[in-house]
Length: 61
Image 1: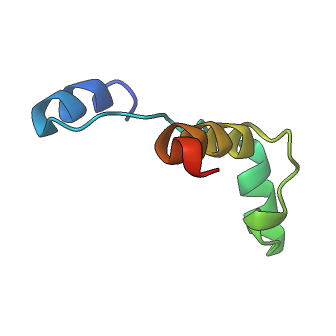
Image 2: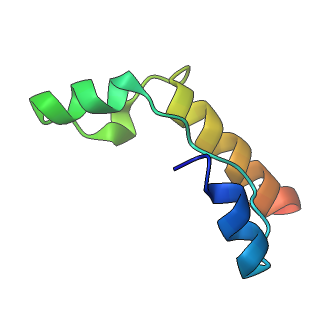
């Protein structure tokens, strides 16, 4: 999906503010029914989402 994403973004004229990488923790949590909101702060997905929020919300944070 990542390989086609830049082209799709270009065609849509939207700005890509970030990509949440695959994170094995999400699969592991899903398998045992744990909510992903409880992922560790250093999880790849959590770090990426925080960076995206900071870019989008900027001064509001």
